[in-house]
Length: 289
Image (cartoon, rainbow, N blue to C red):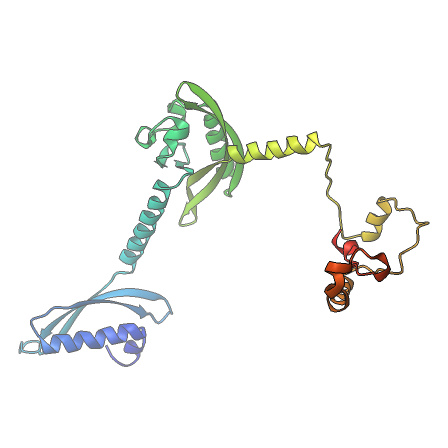
């Protein structure tokens, strides 16, 4: 490999190849192997593996032999396996419910959390169709509708679901946010990943806040600040009351009053602030309230 072919290697690949020849010339008994990236004439990068043999002492060869093979596909599979392993590790330790369904409704994966909500171990679900497993009807209905929906429109969906969960002798209702994510293999829809996040506690707190707000008679409404004139009109302000000349609105005016207070009044404020004739107030109230 020389000239233009050598230039098609990455800098790291060029260095690896140089070292390979140095090693095998120094010790002909070795058969070192290297992996490197090569850029084809069409610009596509491929991964190559070369194994070297020193046959300089063989009169029939009198050279160094490189057995080279394309390992691009092998590297791709290895990368996918590493990613899959990392993702499975994350799933196994997640507090969320994680399920992978085939397009015909079979369980391809279920993390340990399913036992807390479905009362089934992952082993009791794998390779079984959800319709053949004893599950709450609300879940079966959700799985069925989700599969049809994602097959019809392969995009992520969000569903809020209330499911019954047995805790000892009691059955409690848990509110779950169920996210369904379509998974593709070479652009073809293959499986559906379902992630369920328990939002029961968040909903309870939200309800408590609403109850407290209602008990105080607080009725909050959003307002549009894009049209201030229209907003002021809605407030039904008495227009007969003229503007105050002594104060102007805005943060710059607030800073001006604060600086004046610090420079001219603060030194006497602690001892003489109760004397109205001295006007030692900060005049900050209109800006703070």
